Image (cartoon, rainbow, N blue to C red; front, top):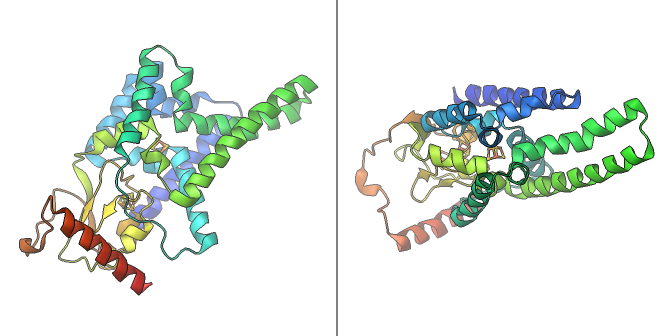
Length: 291
Ligand code: SF4
Ligand code: SF4
Ligand code: SF4
Protein backbone atom coordinates (compact mmCIF):
# COMPACT_ATOMS: atom_id res chain seq x y z
CA UNK A 1 0.00 0.00 0.00
CA UNK A 2 2.78 2.43 0.90
CA UNK A 3 4.44 1.88 -2.48
CA UNK A 4 1.21 3.02 -4.18
CA UNK A 5 0.94 6.05 -1.89
CA UNK A 6 4.56 6.93 -2.66
CA UNK A 7 3.94 6.65 -6.40
CA UNK A 8 0.86 8.88 -6.12
CA UNK A 9 2.84 11.33 -4.02
CA UNK A 10 5.59 11.52 -6.64
CA UNK A 11 3.00 11.98 -9.42
CA UNK A 12 1.32 14.80 -7.51
CA UNK A 13 4.68 16.44 -6.81
CA UNK A 14 5.61 16.34 -10.50
CA UNK A 15 2.28 17.97 -11.40
CA UNK A 16 2.76 20.62 -8.71
CA UNK A 17 6.21 21.36 -10.10
CA UNK A 18 5.34 21.12 -13.80
CA UNK A 19 2.18 23.23 -13.89
CA UNK A 20 3.56 26.38 -12.21
CA UNK A 21 6.86 26.02 -14.08
CA UNK A 22 5.08 26.01 -17.44
CA UNK A 23 2.80 28.82 -16.22
CA UNK A 24 5.86 30.85 -15.34
CA UNK A 25 7.47 30.26 -18.71
CA UNK A 26 4.33 31.43 -20.50
CA UNK A 27 4.18 34.53 -18.29
CA UNK A 28 1.73 33.75 -15.45
CA UNK A 29 3.90 34.13 -12.35
CA UNK A 30 1.10 34.89 -9.84
CA UNK A 31 0.48 31.17 -9.42
CA UNK A 32 3.76 30.88 -7.49
CA UNK A 33 2.93 33.45 -4.85
CA UNK A 34 -0.45 31.80 -4.32
CA UNK A 35 1.16 28.49 -3.45
CA UNK A 36 4.03 29.53 -1.22
CA UNK A 37 3.44 29.82 2.50
CA UNK A 38 6.20 32.31 3.30
CA UNK A 39 5.30 34.55 0.39
CA UNK A 40 1.68 34.35 1.57
CA UNK A 41 2.80 35.66 4.91
CA UNK A 42 4.75 38.47 3.30
CA UNK A 43 1.85 39.36 1.04
CA UNK A 44 -0.55 39.34 3.98
CA UNK A 45 -2.51 36.41 2.58
CA UNK A 46 -2.78 34.43 5.81
CA UNK A 47 -5.43 31.99 4.56
CA UNK A 48 -2.87 30.00 2.58
CA UNK A 49 -0.43 30.02 5.49
CA UNK A 50 -3.06 28.92 8.01
CA UNK A 51 -4.20 26.17 5.66
CA UNK A 52 -0.71 24.67 5.31
CA UNK A 53 0.03 25.04 9.02
CA UNK A 54 -3.21 23.17 9.77
CA UNK A 55 -2.29 20.44 7.27
CA UNK A 56 1.15 20.14 8.91
CA UNK A 57 -0.38 19.87 12.37
CA UNK A 58 -2.37 16.86 11.22
CA UNK A 59 -0.30 15.18 8.50
CA UNK A 60 3.24 16.59 8.82
CA UNK A 61 5.14 18.38 6.05
CA UNK A 62 3.01 17.24 3.11
CA UNK A 63 3.62 20.63 1.57
CA UNK A 64 7.33 19.87 1.28
CA UNK A 65 6.80 16.45 -0.31
CA UNK A 66 4.14 17.42 -2.83
CA UNK A 67 3.60 21.14 -3.41
CA UNK A 68 6.99 22.82 -3.28
CA UNK A 69 8.70 22.60 -6.70
CA UNK A 70 12.13 23.23 -5.24
CA UNK A 71 11.75 20.22 -2.96
CA UNK A 72 10.74 18.06 -5.94
CA UNK A 73 13.67 19.41 -7.96
CA UNK A 74 16.03 18.55 -5.05
CA UNK A 75 14.61 15.01 -4.93
CA UNK A 76 15.28 14.66 -8.66
CA UNK A 77 18.86 15.87 -8.27
CA UNK A 78 19.57 13.63 -5.27
CA UNK A 79 18.13 10.63 -7.12
CA UNK A 80 20.38 11.41 -10.07
CA UNK A 81 23.37 11.76 -7.73
CA UNK A 82 22.69 8.33 -6.24
CA UNK A 83 22.28 6.72 -9.65
CA UNK A 84 25.37 8.30 -11.17
CA UNK A 85 27.66 7.67 -8.21
CA UNK A 86 26.10 4.27 -7.49
CA UNK A 87 26.43 4.92 -3.80
CA UNK A 88 25.76 1.90 -1.65
CA UNK A 89 25.15 4.14 1.34
CA UNK A 90 23.14 7.19 0.41
CA UNK A 91 22.25 8.96 3.63
CA UNK A 92 22.78 8.57 7.34
CA UNK A 93 21.05 9.88 10.42
CA UNK A 94 22.25 13.39 11.26
CA UNK A 95 21.71 15.43 14.37
CA UNK A 96 19.33 18.34 13.67
CA UNK A 97 20.98 21.68 12.82
CA UNK A 98 18.70 23.53 15.17
CA UNK A 99 20.88 26.64 15.59
CA UNK A 100 21.27 27.12 11.84
CA UNK A 101 17.53 26.68 11.35
CA UNK A 102 16.68 29.17 14.06
CA UNK A 103 19.18 31.67 12.64
CA UNK A 104 17.75 31.59 9.10
CA UNK A 105 14.19 31.63 10.39
CA UNK A 106 14.88 34.56 12.71
CA UNK A 107 16.55 36.54 9.91
CA UNK A 108 13.50 35.98 7.67
CA UNK A 109 11.03 37.01 10.39
CA UNK A 110 13.03 40.11 11.35
CA UNK A 111 13.21 41.17 7.71
CA UNK A 112 9.45 40.64 7.32
CA UNK A 113 8.75 42.63 10.49
CA UNK A 114 10.99 45.41 9.17
CA UNK A 115 8.58 45.69 6.29
CA UNK A 116 10.80 44.39 3.54
CA UNK A 117 9.40 41.89 1.07
CA UNK A 118 12.38 41.53 -1.24
CA UNK A 119 15.05 40.36 1.20
CA UNK A 120 12.97 37.63 2.90
CA UNK A 121 12.12 36.18 -0.48
CA UNK A 122 15.86 35.74 -1.05
CA UNK A 123 15.79 33.27 1.83
CA UNK A 124 12.71 31.59 0.50
CA UNK A 125 13.61 28.66 -1.79
CA UNK A 126 10.18 28.60 -3.45
CA UNK A 127 10.57 32.14 -4.70
CA UNK A 128 14.19 31.43 -5.56
CA UNK A 129 13.03 28.50 -7.69
CA UNK A 130 10.59 30.79 -9.53
CA UNK A 131 13.34 33.34 -10.09
CA UNK A 132 15.72 30.69 -11.35
CA UNK A 133 13.20 29.31 -13.85
CA UNK A 134 12.44 32.85 -14.94
CA UNK A 135 16.11 33.75 -15.37
CA UNK A 136 17.26 30.50 -16.95
CA UNK A 137 14.29 29.71 -19.18
CA UNK A 138 11.39 32.17 -19.31
CA UNK A 139 13.31 35.40 -20.00
CA UNK A 140 15.74 34.01 -22.61
CA UNK A 141 12.81 32.34 -24.41
CA UNK A 142 10.86 35.61 -24.34
CA UNK A 143 13.83 37.65 -25.59
CA UNK A 144 14.50 35.21 -28.39
CA UNK A 145 10.83 35.45 -29.37
CA UNK A 146 10.71 39.26 -29.65
CA UNK A 147 14.23 39.81 -30.99
CA UNK A 148 15.34 42.07 -28.12
CA UNK A 149 17.97 44.84 -28.28
CA UNK A 150 21.51 44.47 -26.86
CA UNK A 151 20.69 46.25 -23.53
CA UNK A 152 17.86 43.85 -22.75
CA UNK A 153 20.04 40.90 -23.69
CA UNK A 154 22.84 42.10 -21.32
CA UNK A 155 20.34 42.49 -18.47
CA UNK A 156 19.01 39.03 -19.22
CA UNK A 157 22.53 37.57 -19.23
CA UNK A 158 23.22 39.05 -15.78
CA UNK A 159 20.05 37.63 -14.27
CA UNK A 160 20.66 34.33 -16.05
CA UNK A 161 24.14 34.15 -14.50
CA UNK A 162 22.70 34.82 -11.03
CA UNK A 163 19.99 32.22 -11.61
CA UNK A 164 22.61 29.73 -12.81
CA UNK A 165 24.76 30.36 -9.71
CA UNK A 166 21.82 29.74 -7.40
CA UNK A 167 20.77 26.63 -9.35
CA UNK A 168 24.33 25.30 -9.18
CA UNK A 169 24.46 25.81 -5.42
CA UNK A 170 21.18 23.95 -4.91
CA UNK A 171 22.16 21.16 -7.30
CA UNK A 172 25.54 20.57 -5.63
CA UNK A 173 23.96 20.57 -2.18
CA UNK A 174 21.08 18.27 -3.13
CA UNK A 175 23.41 15.95 -5.05
CA UNK A 176 25.43 15.24 -1.89
CA UNK A 177 23.03 15.96 0.95
CA UNK A 178 19.47 15.41 -0.27
CA UNK A 179 17.05 17.64 1.61
CA UNK A 180 19.53 19.22 4.02
CA UNK A 181 18.82 22.71 2.65
CA UNK A 182 15.14 22.12 3.47
CA UNK A 183 16.07 21.45 7.07
CA UNK A 184 18.53 24.27 7.57
CA UNK A 185 18.08 27.35 5.36
CA UNK A 186 14.41 27.32 4.36
CA UNK A 187 12.25 29.47 6.67
CA UNK A 188 9.04 27.93 5.28
CA UNK A 189 10.42 24.48 6.06
CA UNK A 190 11.31 25.56 9.60
CA UNK A 191 7.81 26.96 10.16
CA UNK A 192 6.11 23.83 8.83
CA UNK A 193 8.59 21.67 10.76
CA UNK A 194 7.57 23.43 13.97
CA UNK A 195 3.92 22.74 13.21
CA UNK A 196 4.74 19.10 12.40
CA UNK A 197 6.54 18.50 15.68
CA UNK A 198 3.49 16.86 17.22
CA UNK A 199 1.67 16.01 14.00
CA UNK A 200 -1.24 13.65 14.58
CA UNK A 201 -0.18 11.37 11.72
CA UNK A 202 3.52 10.55 11.58
CA UNK A 203 5.89 7.72 10.74
CA UNK A 204 6.44 5.19 13.46
CA UNK A 205 8.91 2.30 13.70
CA UNK A 206 7.60 -0.95 15.11
CA UNK A 207 10.59 -2.29 17.04
CA UNK A 208 9.02 -5.73 17.21
CA UNK A 209 9.31 -5.95 13.44
CA UNK A 210 12.46 -3.91 12.78
CA UNK A 211 15.49 -6.05 11.94
CA UNK A 212 17.92 -3.08 11.94
CA UNK A 213 18.81 -3.58 8.29
CA UNK A 214 19.40 0.17 7.86
CA UNK A 215 17.52 0.44 4.55
CA UNK A 216 15.19 3.18 5.77
CA UNK A 217 18.09 5.29 7.05
CA UNK A 218 19.90 4.75 3.75
CA UNK A 219 17.11 6.29 1.66
CA UNK A 220 15.99 9.06 4.04
CA UNK A 221 16.98 12.29 2.27
CA UNK A 222 16.25 14.24 5.44
CA UNK A 223 18.60 12.13 7.57
CA UNK A 224 15.95 12.06 10.27
CA UNK A 225 15.63 8.34 11.07
CA UNK A 226 17.50 7.42 14.23
CA UNK A 227 17.72 3.65 14.35
CA UNK A 228 19.36 3.66 17.77
CA UNK A 229 16.30 5.09 19.45
CA UNK A 230 14.00 3.92 16.64
CA UNK A 231 12.55 7.38 16.35
CA UNK A 232 11.87 9.70 13.42
CA UNK A 233 12.31 13.45 13.78
CA UNK A 234 8.94 14.75 12.58
CA UNK A 235 10.23 18.32 12.30
CA UNK A 236 12.60 17.21 9.52
CA UNK A 237 10.57 14.40 7.95
CA UNK A 238 9.11 15.56 4.63
CA UNK A 239 6.53 12.75 4.43
CA UNK A 240 7.96 11.26 1.23
CA UNK A 241 7.07 7.61 2.07
CA UNK A 242 10.48 6.42 0.79
CA UNK A 243 11.26 4.62 4.06
CA UNK A 244 7.92 2.84 4.27
CA UNK A 245 8.19 1.71 0.66
CA UNK A 246 11.65 0.21 1.12
CA UNK A 247 11.30 -1.41 4.55
CA UNK A 248 11.56 -5.19 3.98
CA UNK A 249 9.57 -6.07 7.06
CA UNK A 250 6.75 -3.49 7.01
CA UNK A 251 8.11 -2.10 10.26
CA UNK A 252 7.41 1.56 9.43
CA UNK A 253 3.84 2.79 9.40
CA UNK A 254 2.23 6.17 8.90
CA UNK A 255 -0.22 6.40 11.74
CA UNK A 256 -1.49 8.30 14.71
CA UNK A 257 -0.08 7.38 18.11
CA UNK A 258 2.97 5.27 18.85
CA UNK A 259 3.48 1.56 18.50
CA UNK A 260 3.59 -0.13 21.89
CA UNK A 261 6.45 -2.57 22.30
CA UNK A 262 5.57 -6.14 23.09
CA UNK A 263 8.84 -6.23 25.10
CA UNK A 264 9.21 -2.71 26.57
CA UNK A 265 12.40 -3.67 28.41
CA UNK A 266 14.25 -3.60 25.09
CA UNK A 267 13.46 0.07 24.48
CA UNK A 268 16.42 2.47 24.56
CA UNK A 269 16.32 4.51 27.74
CA UNK A 270 16.19 8.28 27.32
CA UNK A 271 19.33 10.14 28.36
CA UNK A 272 21.60 7.12 28.03
CA UNK A 273 24.20 8.84 25.90
CA UNK A 274 26.83 6.11 26.18
CA UNK A 275 24.32 3.45 25.26
CA UNK A 276 23.26 5.48 22.22
CA UNK A 277 26.87 6.05 21.13
CA UNK A 278 27.55 2.31 21.44
CA UNK A 279 24.40 1.53 19.56
CA UNK A 280 25.33 3.94 16.77
CA UNK A 281 28.82 2.44 16.41
CA UNK A 282 27.48 -1.13 16.47
CA UNK A 283 24.74 -0.34 14.03
CA UNK A 284 27.01 1.40 11.54
CA UNK A 285 29.48 -1.50 11.79
CA UNK A 286 26.73 -4.02 11.16
CA UNK A 287 25.37 -2.09 8.16
CA UNK A 288 28.87 -1.56 6.71
CA UNK A 289 29.64 -5.27 7.07
CA UNK A 290 26.39 -6.09 5.30
CA UNK A 291 27.35 -3.82 2.41
S1 SF4 B 1 11.66 23.09 3.15
FE1 SF4 B 1 11.42 24.86 1.81
S2 SF4 B 1 12.51 24.33 -0.07
FE2 SF4 B 1 12.22 22.46 1.07
S3 SF4 B 1 10.37 21.60 0.22
FE3 SF4 B 1 9.76 22.75 2.06
S4 SF4 B 1 9.25 24.81 1.30
FE4 SF4 B 1 10.37 23.76 -0.33
S1 SF4 C 1 14.06 -0.62 6.86
FE1 SF4 C 1 12.55 -1.45 8.30
S2 SF4 C 1 13.53 -3.25 9.15
FE2 SF4 C 1 15.15 -2.06 8.16
S3 SF4 C 1 15.98 -0.77 9.81
FE3 SF4 C 1 14.37 0.42 8.81
S4 SF4 C 1 12.53 0.00 10.02
FE4 SF4 C 1 14.00 -1.58 10.54
S1 SF4 D 1 11.46 9.54 7.57
FE1 SF4 D 1 10.68 8.44 5.77
S2 SF4 D 1 9.03 9.75 5.04
FE2 SF4 D 1 10.26 11.01 6.42
S3 SF4 D 1 11.76 12.05 5.10
FE3 SF4 D 1 12.72 10.17 5.84
S4 SF4 D 1 12.32 8.65 4.22
FE4 SF4 D 1 10.88 10.37 3.90
